[in-house]
Amino acid sequence: MADLSLLQRLCTARGISGSENEVRGIILEEIKSYVDSAEVTPLGNIIAFKKGAKRPGTKLMLNAHMDEVGMIVTYIGEDGLLRFSTVGGIDRRVLCGKAVTVGSGVTGVIGAKPIHLLEEDEKGKSVPLKDLYIDIGAKDREEAEQAVTLGDAVTFDSIFDLSHGMIKSRALDDRAGCAILIDMIQHDLEYDMTFVFAVQEEVGLNGSRTAAYTVAPQAAIVVESTTAADVAGVAKEKQVCCVGQGPVISFMDRHTIYDKEYYRMAFSAAEKAGVKCQAKKAIAGGNDAGAIHVSRGGVRTIAVSLPCRYLHSAVGMISQEDLADAQKLISTLAGEIAGEEYHD
Image 1 (cartoon, rainbow, N blue to C red):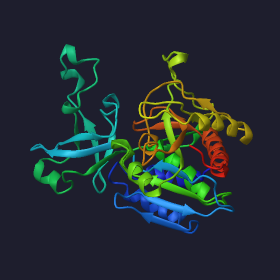
Image 2 (image 1 turned 180 degrees about the horizontal axis):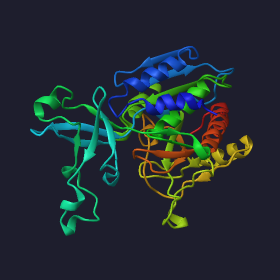
Image 3 (image 1 turned 180 degrees about the vertical axis):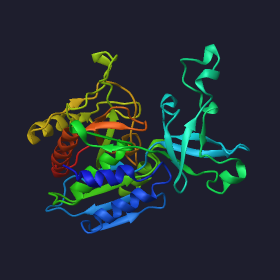
Image 4 (image 1 turned 90 degrees about the vertical axis):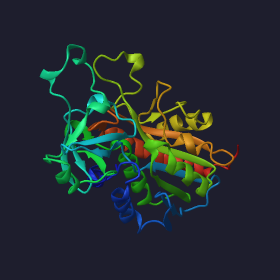
């Protein structure tokens, strides 16, 4: 299984879309001794190439994204309170009362009108984004401007906990995917492979779109996290996937119809690797595959995801067993895809 101490470093590093420097630095340090080449693209992607024991029949790219959802400062009020916009798809219901870090390390809390001052029609509803603010404790705008500036990144403060066989942390989407690819790079490969650690997935798949154009792969495996709704009050048929039931294979989402032969191969590879595997039971969401599979003349693409509860919130939850199983499955599937003679 991927090194959990490394995963902790990745998850606690700050890196909203467009501000991935800290995460990128950790990854480069981890892979530099193991790859044959690594470049940082103008947009900020890492594209790393590692030789395997054999040349591949199919040029394969493995992709995980470095960025996380968060917020960005848009206005500093006379009262010293910060207004903000979200970066990526955050459910505003999770925002109020959360501890955050702003800019270079300023601590704040997301606040709103106190509950005892709410009108009757406001009670029981999520607070509109326009009515939320970040309070860093500054007495006025002048004091706030000494600590933060417009455009500063805002990230959730979070735990990293390994109890009950789970991993609870922010940014598991997609630092867990990054950890899996790093572990693959640090071990011998059967075939030559290219690894992409992409930026700006959460705001439009921007990094993967440019990386796929540069790499020009014939096939791609996107390593992700996806919504697990196996929680109280959700009917079985709407739970999408379940934590602890193995990595998740998508047949379709809102951006991609996945390669049908690779979909079949993923389940076969799971059986070969001796791990559990489950289908994603919803046509929802999307990931970097949406940009990769339509790059240039088209790229045969499959996504392997970790089931994650509370995705895009301050704390997500995945299973340690799922993480280990996903790593085995991806390694097996990558070898099978790369070893095939390419065909459209």
